[in-house]
Length: 104
Image (cartoon, rainbow, N blue to C red; front, side):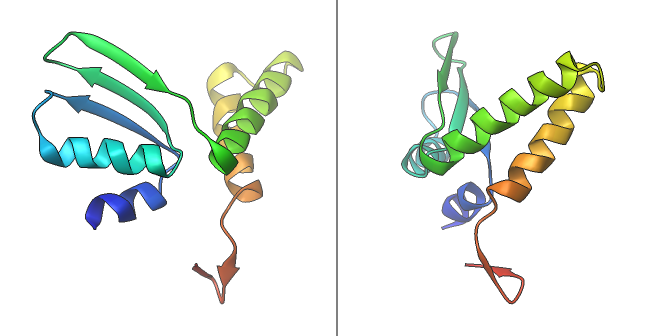
C-alpha cells in the first residue's frame, strides 16, 4: 500500500537493491506497473539497470528533456537550471486531473 502511494506520487524511481529485499522488489514491480522511469543499482551483482518510462510519464520525460535542451541551447540557462525549469513545466503540463484541488 505504501509503495503504491509513493509510486503514484513520483515521476521516477532510483533504487539500490541487494537482490533480497522483498519491499524493494515490490516497489520495483509497482513502479514498472505504473510506468515510472527506473534507475536500479543491484549491489549483489554490481549491476546498473535503467527502465524507460512508459505512457503519460514517458511523454512527460520526453517533454522535459527536449524543453531543457532548448533552454540550454538558447543560452538562457545552464544545464542544471534548464533541467529544473523543464521538470517544473512538465509537472504542470502532465499533472493528474484534480477535483477541488485534490488529486484523483
